[in-house]
Image 1 (cartoon, rainbow, N blue to C red):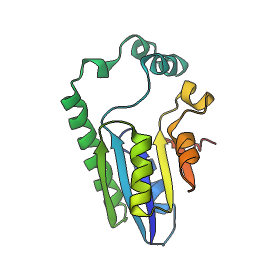
Image 2: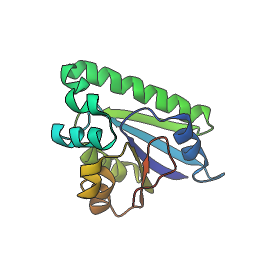
Image 3: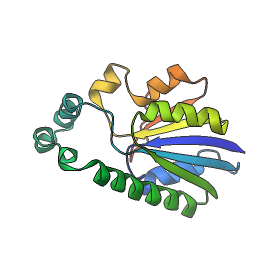
Image 4: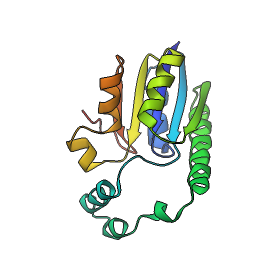
Length: 161
């Protein structure tokens, strides 16, 4: 059995679920999904990302700033439940997960060691600053783990190197 720790910023799309379900063909795969209660990207980084994606309104207004920690955690739990259910519906029988309150990279490192993971898959939106400065989650995980780490842009087939 292949054990995969999957770190994502939000609910996987149908495209992402299909990609995960077919990643290892007919091999039996256990997936442990990790979703942070909130991102660990700074306000300036998020604003630059929004401008780069031409989401100018989002660059001026951080919707999460108005959410309480409980609301952010509740939303993350909903995203986790939806992702786990979608992966199970796609044929992956061994799927579970958790919401981590902060420091998702550190949480994934600990989980990968605890679960004896074979790989880590990271699904994120594009993050211009983090990707260019190599401070994205996948790069940080590659430095801390001696496992394959696949970084995919949510909703696409784009793999981030």
